[in-house]
Each structure stands twice: as structure tokens, then as C-alpha cells.
Length: 175
Image (cartoon, rainbow, N blue to C red; front, side):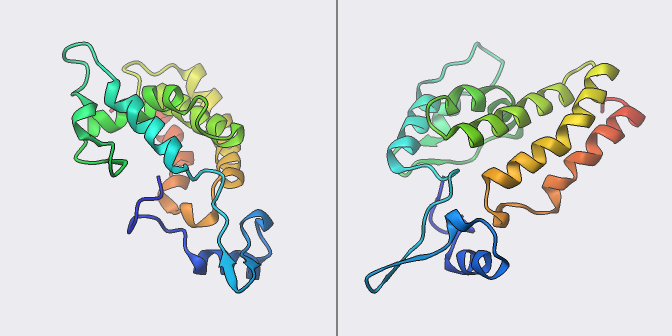
């Protein structure tokens, strides 16, 4: 969402990409005397942030299924704050695929939908071994697609732990 003070995308990141020879679409360019920092394909423009915020603001849930997420959406600042963990799960597993339609480029949208589907399977009350084996094969591919869609600064060790979650689910079952 490119929120001031929260984003890790800065000039240093773009210079590092040049040094490593990665992601030429994110390299800095000079326009006269100014350096232009191209936004990543996953960065939302202001109008698209408002579309996403408006979607969450107008969303209504059946009683008891989730709190009213619209209370936590600040349209003016395009910020979501103070969500409960259940609300974050609801957004990740169910709402994100709906909200992203028509907002993000195809590569980013598809990989986030893939990730949502995988987390939906893993978060089910009843785990099916066939589904777990399928996601075991899909998660490395999904992570590779994430690496294509997002800048390297996005990734930390927590994202790669998702590879091990399916093994733990197979061994230990649902928690």
C-alpha cells in the first residue's frame, strides 16, 4: 500500500538491484538532474488504494462471522489498522482475491490468489491429505512466482517458512 514510514522500498533498494544485476524494471533512471524511482508492479497507485479501501469500507459480514472491517479502514489515509488476527485471516483467505480483481497487474494478482487458496486449505477445520500433498508441490512454485512479482526487499525468512508448514501439518495434523 506504500504507506509512509512502513514501506521498505527506497533508493538503497533500487541501487542494490543495480549492483546485483536483478530486476532491470526497478533500476533507477535519470530524467534531467532527477533520479526516478520506478514503482514495483505490486505497488498500488492512489486511485487503486482508494478502490481497495472503498471495497473494504462497504463490505458487510453476516453476524458473528467477522468484525466489521470497515471500522478499521481509513479511506483518507488509505490505511487499515487495529485489525484482530481473525480479521487478518478473513482478508487473506477470502477477501483479498475479491478485492484485487481489476486492481493489480495479472502476475501479482494471480500469485496472491494462489497464496490465499493455499492458506485457505491449510486453515481448514479438517485437513485432507490429498490437498496437503497438492499444496506441498504448489508452494515452492508459488514462492518463485512471488519472487517474480515482488521486489527482493519484500522477502524475509518468515515467507519461506511456509514451505515447512505443510510438512508439519502432515506430521502433526491441525492445531
